[in-house]
Length: 234
Image 1 (cartoon, rainbow, N blue to C red):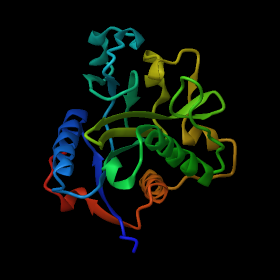
Image 2 (image 1 turned 180 degrees about the vertical axis):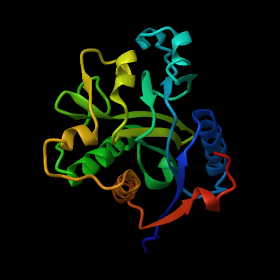
Image 3 (image 1 turned 90 degrees about the vertical axis):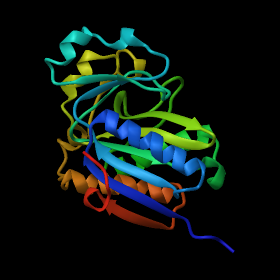
Image 4 (image 1 turned 135 degrees about the vertical axis):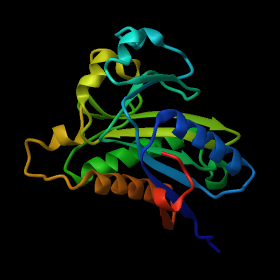
């Protein structure tokens, strides 16, 4: 008998990075003791640069003191991966799920995250591809459209993926995105600009990203919860 698997999705809108980080830590702890079921945070951040646990500060190309004048923050994290940017009009998904319960290893998990962004891109006629040698994330040609940085502790995931719907791409010029030099960054808006494809409201696009995730990870049903349904500060 196949047991149906549900995914609880929290639509949080725009959330400060540190608040989202603390929320992930609490939910990951709750998931480890089975206090909650698999949960996916769907949100966006104000302009924020984050560094992974390797602390590759040299890939930040401007003095940290200049970030505040740019309206951006810098945070150090315990996720994998290098420096990246989060900001408005970029869809961020943070899965808090048990890999042991679904029988996935770390590599397959990352591949599924890549496939989530590839499948969304294909809905809009954009041909994206995943991991190349030493280059994680999702690409359109040599242009990066989606980044991945994950943390797995006791089989429970946190952090996740960031997909560029239509962010201000000039923010990426101040870093070596994901530590990969000489590569451009792109967005869904940029890749569809020369076609007749009209993008819907980005809330719709972000929900489609969630749907792609749920399908690839084998969830039978999505339980949507908006920020107003949850006791969370923005």
